Length: 316
Length: 259
Image 1 (tube, chains in turn blue, yellow):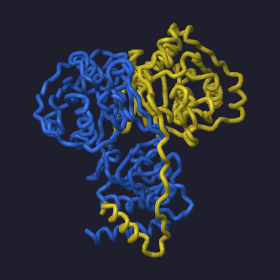
Image 2: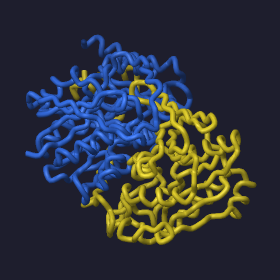
Image 3: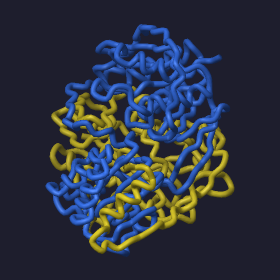
Image 4: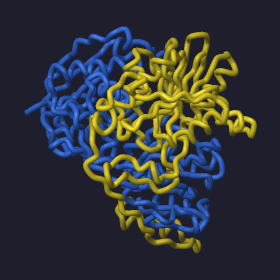
């Protein structure tokens, strides 16, 4: 069975990210999964094996890790040439897409982004136009290079004992034009990552100020979810931009999305309307968010949310 | 500094969007087409750099004849001139082919700095800056929330899921920006009038030495097989808080097994 390269999304802080396990699960329908790890893989190998990685390719060293994505694309391109995989899967994240783009140019090969599924014949299902359309598409030149959106499928284990292979890295000078001089990890606590979380609690303009976002965080923590924010809230300085959900922020597709004080402008809906269940609290009964909420409470979030928090504590 | 800003015309993301029934490409003819919002931030950043360091700002657009509207809109913000790559054979081009065309056009412009929006609201593919850098053999600094220019050295702060990174490179380079980087100016009346007289150079595929079958539907590296509108969500239960809204909310979450 041909190998399927899965470019691993992982970090020291977060470990192997859920999207990687989803990719391994999808890869198994296409062939034999081989994980590609940049940087030290020792902490990740077991987890990758648990989800079916038969091989783990590892590329390390400053030539790979000290520069922005270009060396990684070269490593993957070399690997594609040597192992002739059936497909390459990457995360639909900034870095995953960037590697995919360079890879497509290097190989003069098609690519598909934001897929939620890939069938055995390589046909990808993509959600388009901010969740309002679904397309099926196929790479028609070369092998399928597909980026997979987090929370697309339920990862299922399929234990394997991966063979670990250290790759020889041969990057060119033009791969080393953009140097990473600093990587800053900002404190994010124990909350799950926004795009991977199965529950997201978001606040909007109605939250009123940065301090009040504690209320959003409290509910998120009680539910074990991530915190998000609307563009209006981010633009008003209530919450940092990396938590913005919407057209110009993150796209999320959790099991449960809780919208607090969010009117539901198209900009916001674009980032969350594929969520499985949507719950909204807003004092404006006419707010468009109620058009898509499975359960909506018209009321003052400063009364409704603390009461809900107390009720959850009682039930625990 | 010679700066080129990539500008794309896209269907308004606030209106209904669809694919053309005949060939599954983005329906542009009947859509309300606007300048891609993120590109306005790219234009603003280019103008700020020009104001601080001198130079010239050129808008580069690939798109059908109607894209002229977005080019004029872009020029009304302050860029000096524009280049419009337009050719009927480009209809249906994939990202790989688009990068080939834009790279060829950039080859005629001798830019020190190419600035793009981080993504377009239609495709949201987010790969163009790196594809161009790959083709041109120059640096890419993508997803900037802050850009500093010091002589020929560019430094970008880019957000990551866990914090941020600082990356640096020398010109020539491609930089892509998010909407956190600045606040785009509104075109002034004077700017709008001036834009009408600014030069817009037209380039065809022949001008760029690219054959028609390398691009468009004929040269596409991927194809859309089918398209369906997702059924719109329907509103569920809506209750008014009568003092127990929070409790009721949790009762609902409990029936759905979230608590």
